[in-house]
Image 1: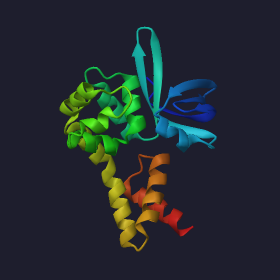
Image 2 (image 1 turned 120 degrees about the vertical axis):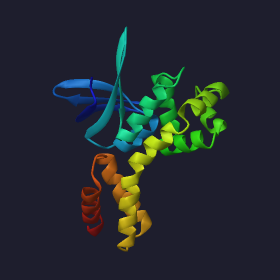
Image 3 (image 1 turned 180 degrees about the vertical axis):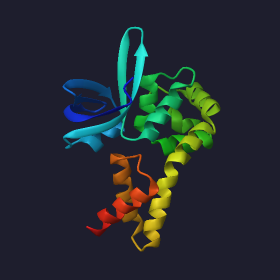
Image 4 (image 1 turned 90 degrees about the vertical axis):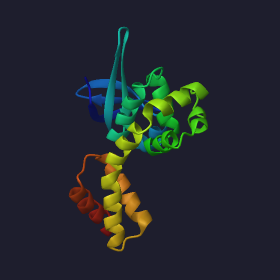
Length: 188
């Protein structure tokens, strides 16, 4: 299984990127919301979910591990396949999805193309508590880093941008390394 892909962008269009790694071009399906993050870049580093069916092997890529983990949680819901899970992550961030599920906002989920009232209600029933826990685990170091930077006197917006940029390019940074790199970025 392919879990991470890092390489040159050969082709980019909304919902799809071809990444060359090791001389092979991998076609990777993306949330539409990821497209603007890759425009103008020569390389892409994506966390990948490999989806295998008897007649097809498909790759789904995400800029953060949190997005990939949320995608996998969505696939565990009865009646949700990769196309619908990708549509949900194209329309909602993992944080937004967690908030909609926890507050039982089925209309917000049903606003995503391909999601009806029954599917939205099923998502709420099957994911309540699960998405929030997954998102909270990923968000804690982000919040801690932003809090530390604002306590040092940096504006909240600048701290959030610096931390967000670093986590998009390398989501596995521990808190101390994240703070060190964010401080370097803010000093420049």
